[in-house]
Length: 190
Image (cartoon, rainbow, N blue to C red; front, side, top):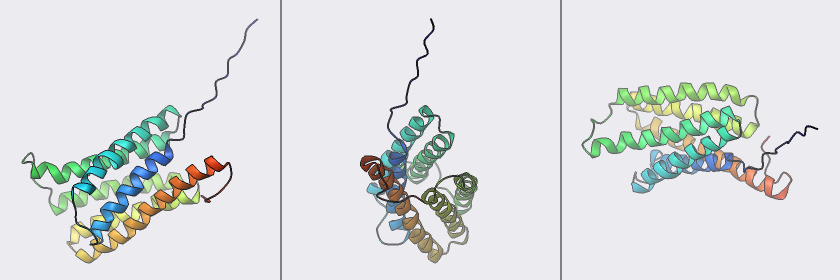
């Protein structure tokens, strides 16, 4: 007699961790871009540890759950934060030349193109996720244009838009946490 064992995945949803790592770090950096706070060790540390490492961990956890979109998004954006901090601190340590405006334009444009493709994928997901990726695509475009033109007003507008983008990711994370905890919709995602 043969028996089949069926295992049920009981691991936690890693998306709120990734969304919070992305959202909180994005809000803080864009408070700087909007001209509200200075660029300091606080933003760089958030970029390394919460925006960077925590998102990579969330991406690996999404891989374990078989979620390709979550794996690619969280791991990639975690690496985005780590590379961004590297771009800022490597020149200060004397390990590399500072990136030119053209280099940063190329960097931000590549991330914007990548994000635009992920946005297309979100059209099969909930409205909150669509908003996060749609607003992030716009954010990368504004940042790239700001670096290309050197126009501080565009950077400031990007900062305001980035605060909205980051806040939307925080909202989506909190919605997933609270909806799961209460077993009903506390904060809607659609």
